[in-house]
Length: 284
Image (cartoon, rainbow, N blue to C red; front, side):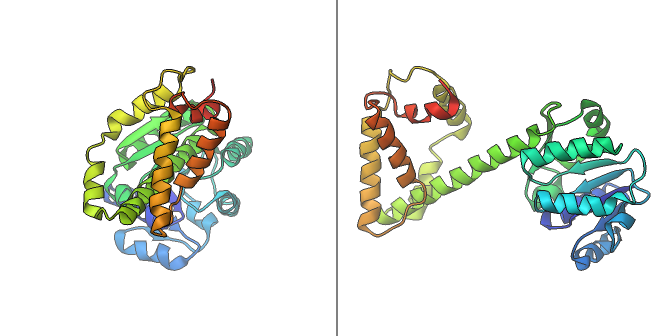
């Protein structure tokens, strides 16, 4: 028997997928109507988290933040039986995940942080990626139950804060990528390039090849052999900003990148590859 606490779009679809696989699932949500709605799919709804976890051996949580996870788990604790394991899919702080793992271990309750790179449809279809970190024995015990929930399950090792950190880094990449695409469409608007042609441009780039190559280049200590030097990159950035400003089209992240380029130009790196501006972040 499983309990699932937190029934937003992601949590609700996780539950629906579990039910389709023949699992018996107790559900709870702060808004009781979301729990009751899943009764039509076969879930058993409860108005109290402690009651929801009674008789279960695995408690999944998918909530908003650290404070919500701590609050709901404290409320549920009274109903947890010895040997219960908590699987936390919430995107939280790394410090919060580590503190929870230690606190629940002291209480004799296993805790595994297992955030996901998944949307609601992924949760329903069991596609997308789930990452996890924490006690290896707990992960090995849960692995057969977690693998059917996703397309790929990745164990990141015993550090209890590692999955939280990697999830935040992944989300940063996705947020930055989207903001960069937004600037590209905005520049297209300023230059009179239709959205369709901007979108076609993106098809020319293979992220599978570009990202690993760019990461390798960033990790190099010597950027003196430039394929695109910082002075030229700053000139192109100036042209982009001038075009956008001329049409009063706002840009999201490019001005901040230009400011960083200027700092490195002032430090005497005009002839270096422009990737030198990442050196402080990646070391070297």
